[in-house]
Structures are given as structure tokens and as C-alpha cells.
Length: 193
Image 1 (tube, rainbow, N blue to C red):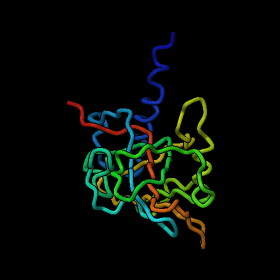
Image 2 (cartoon, rainbow, N blue to C red):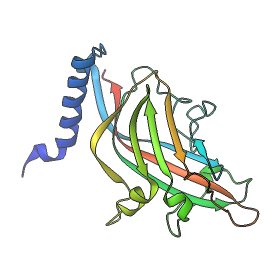
Image 3 (spheres, rainbow, N blue to C red):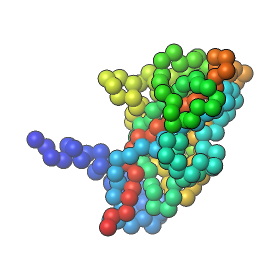
Image 4 (cartoon, one colour):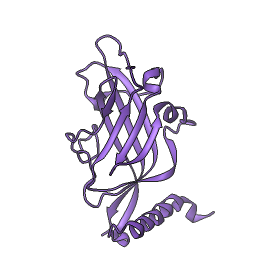
């Protein structure tokens, strides 16, 4: 039994952070950074056409709503993303986002062909059609593997948008609104003691 096999992703993340620190001079004390498996998430009631910003800078790490710090990550909170997940639901407009039963069945075409875009510092970190994300789910795993790491820096504004196809919009059932849930899988850093 190879004891390192359980730590392979951890070791890759530590190496990746060290290389980024050296290349860009972030001045991280990598010996004090402890990457831990984690998820960033956003649950939100949204519009049904155009470009929709999921991080408006208002929700500040509210349990069940988002674990972003407004539209950033706090100092020392570095996130290395390696997967993304998407789900939706049509609900009564007064429903709290944390009580929605999000899913992926019967995904409307307008949402299926919308793009999920993550940007930071004018750099696109992720840009995927929602269809590509949802179609990658298999064997109970509800994440699309990005195939590469995407670095989310602390104290820099993060944009997470849904870009609907031009000229089309989702038509919710009568008296319902569109709710979405986006999760980003990866490793988040914590300070070692």
C-alpha cells in the first residue's frame, strides 16, 4: 500500500503554491500555509437573461448563502480550484437560498448553453458552458474536473458570472424565480500553528 497516494493532490497543491509564490513574488510564507480540502460556494436567486454577477459584494460569508468574503477572499485565504459544480431550481421568490433543493434534471436549454465565468485581475480562471459542467457528472461525482489548477488570490476582487446566450432568457414557471448553486472544489490555505 502506497501511503503517499492519499496525499498526492495535497502534494501537487503545495508544489503549485510554491511555484506560484516564487514566480510572482507573492511573499507567502509557504512553510506556514496548510492547504486543506475545501469548497467555495454561492447560492443565489438570479435574473434569467443577460450577464448575471453571482458575487455582488453584499453577502459576507453567510452560512448557506456563500462562503466568499463579499466578492473577495480575506488575507491569507488562498484557494486552489480544481473542480466546479452547478445546480438550479425554480422556486417561490420568497424562498431562502439555503432551503432550496437544487438539482440538474430538465435543465432549460437557455441555461444549458449559458457560460459560467470566473475572473480575477482581468484573467479568466474558468469559462465553461453549464452544459459541459452538468454533463461531466458521473458515478455520483457532481463536479467537473478542471484538468488544471486555478489560483484564487486573497484581497483581489473575484467575478463569478453567468452569461446567457445573446437574445434569449430562461422562462420560469408562473410565480417562480430562478435559483442557482455553484460550488468550486479545491484546497484552501490555513495558517499553521
